[in-house]
View 1 (spheres, rainbow, N blue to C red):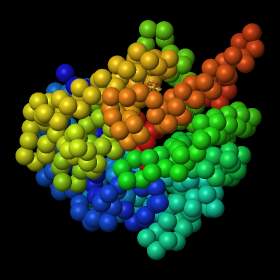
View 2: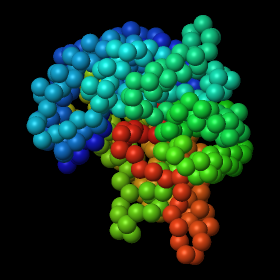
View 3: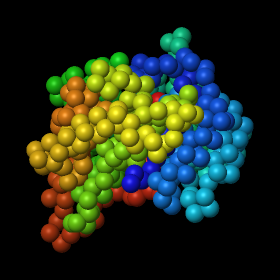
View 4: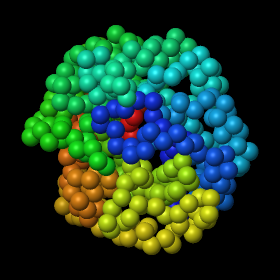
Amino acid sequence: MPVIELLVIQPTPFCNINCSYCYLPDRRSRAVVSKETLSNLFTEVFASGWVRDCLSVVWHAGEPMVLPVEFYRDAFRTIDALKPACVSISHSFQTNGMLLDDAWCDFLLAEQVGIGVSIDGPRHLHDRHRLTRSGQGTFDRTLAGIRLLRRRGVPFHVISVLSSPSLKSPGEMFDFYVSEGIEEVCFNVEESEGDHVSATFAQHDVEAEFSRFMTEFWRRSAAAPGRMSFIREIDHAIRQVLRPQDAVTLNQLTEPFAVISMDVAGNISTFSPELLGLKNAEYGDFLLGNINTDRLVDMLAHPNLARMRRDIEAGVELCRQQCQYFSVCGGGEPVNKLSENGSFVSTETTHCRLTRMRLTDLVLDAIDRLPASGSAITGFAGQAHVPVVPDRLEM
Ligand code: SF4
């Protein structure tokens, strides 16, 4: 029986900006998800019997804050009215932060919504890619949003997309975060997906550059205790390496319905959220049905699911047989295998070499360098409120 861990809901495809690396195809559309569609989704999710005691909901795949606070107040009330008492729900937004104001802060605090703000570092790095439709930089407004969150005491983390110049600037990136009081960071390397082809991935030395970046960033963090409380990539790699011997790595992106993605029209997909919106000769539009017309439990029997599942599981099996990092990875991310290798039935990608292999190497090297008397690996701190978001979601 599936276990739903994460719902990724597209409240609107619209985005108020136009980043050069964005993979979302309909970001000019001003469609808004209807109350009925949300109600149908949560009715079906709770009726499926596939939810345990907690469920994460990420409002994403468009800029969520282009909709008014009242939209989410209504949506949260609708969800709460449908929710069994034994299930707890944590909501989070991934936002460019430009529309944050006091009303948003009041709401985020009252509802304990997790916030990830997309900022790519200091102005000259951020404004290379994160632009308005007229080509203006967005740094000032994003930073104003971050400063407001800090003033108002709203917990948040940032997600920064690393491209070629920022990979060469770990010290400058670290100093920027510290100067702005940003304590929790997540990194995504600009990657190829959908129609976007990453120039960074095409660099022959991207793996070495990424390793150098993370090594130096971690070193600086360890040398300045109290400044950086969470570096997602390091935190995750340490957890994977230093886990109980018999602990199995669960990969929610390869488990049917562990992650459910719903677009603004109620179309449902699973596995990697980024598949929703893509098209492919073998799997069509990756859809399993529409929540306004189909039962969620019936989607288990959808032929598209059978095809995707067969091939994704075959890819995981190849990983299990061939990759020495399988125990810390669990078989990678289907959308990367498809985007980079042209098939789910494949193994290595640039994405997994960076986010799994090189980070694991980094942690193993750090453990090797520990004195024999044994001391803690510095720079690691677990965090409670950073949501379970696949590491490729960015806006
Ligand atoms: S690191 Fe790459 S090749 Fe290895 S198990 Fe993960 S996805 Fe497969």
